Length: 210
Image (cartoon, rainbow, N blue to C red; front, top):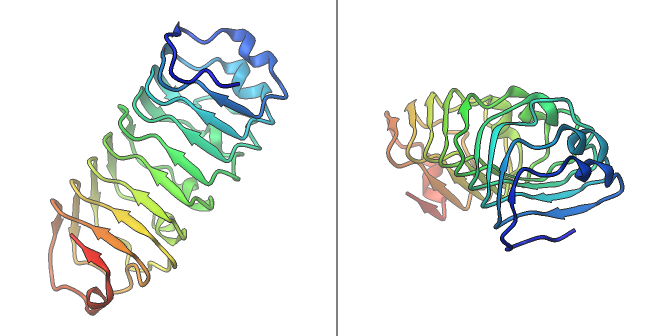
């Protein structure tokens, strides 16, 4: 179902949860609001692409257990979600995850490190705390944690390979840059943090550093 770029508004009807065999749902660029219907999260087990961008959805996204075991793409940027619940624990097939430009608070949950993301963005939120070291061991094409309130040191046991783009800028990361960080990164952005120490030798092999 594709409802992209219309003038729909209000809460999503509970009847959306009756579409048990739906595989693609694009609700982006509308004026939907409110929280996501629980029945949609627990019944549409074949849904693999879900686009919610540019609406006014609120609350904690996936605060309840879900059955979205087939979902590979979740794009929910530019809404008013305030947190990420444990409801995605069973959606281990997720490869594209975008919750940028919301009102997310709290920390990055440790179980995200067990996924196989290619694209992961939570930029422009209010997230804080340290980043689970396991998250840096995923071979992302893009990992965007920029413009939050993340703090602490960068993991020294980084073992990710074939990383494409890593955006860490506009946070509060501190300490040295580990020499093991990003052996194959194409772009590394770390401006406006509290990093210190010496620049490790690996920097000489980077394509872009800013």
